[in-house]
Length: 113
Length: 115
Image 1 (cartoon, rainbow over the protein chains, first blue to last red):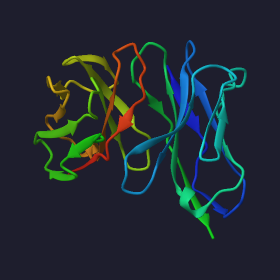
Image 2 (image 1 turned 120 degrees about the horizontal axis):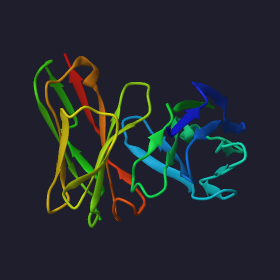
Image 3 (image 1 turned 180 degrees about the vertical axis):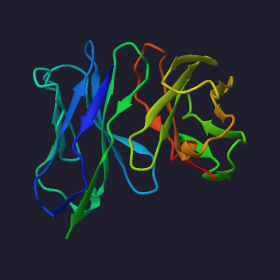
Image 4 (image 1 turned 135 degrees about the vertical axis):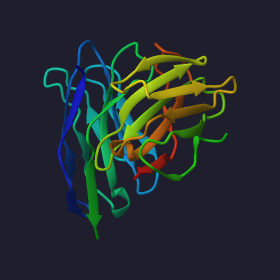
């Protein structure tokens, strides 16, 4: 079945460091791929998405490229800030299923000054 | 435009009891999905409602049921609560349908504790 495997955390980085959070997926067909962020005490917020192979999603300095050949959607940011501290979830949505998402287990990021 | 709201924020129940969680969709959204997020885990899809009918269900037993009302608000009902039902329950709404993938907006969740 469809699933997402996400890099385990927690991850601790110094401010202005480079961030990579790995995400790979298993799916039939051509799913859409997403990164969501969850700040403490809040619900999930969409960070970025890509709906087809080779698409690059980007938002707030974060980027991820849909790589079908490696079934990956790694999240990157060139220079993290303290305010980026949160839990990040990779997710996929199979085609023609409305909003049935499959989420990874989440990666906790802490950025220290 | 109001976002997705959920009530209550926190809830404590005893094993064997029944619980109802509520969700108010973002204005104009006609599709609602419910997710269970256990501590330290990612959200797991429970089911999706469109036009007051269940349309898509994850790997959850029948004691998890739902309703969607004409105003697109929604309820999640869980019967015969078990300890493993302790989790954050998230509601998400979108505009579209069972095969149309509109952007999904999540509520802040209801934290259910079963003792």
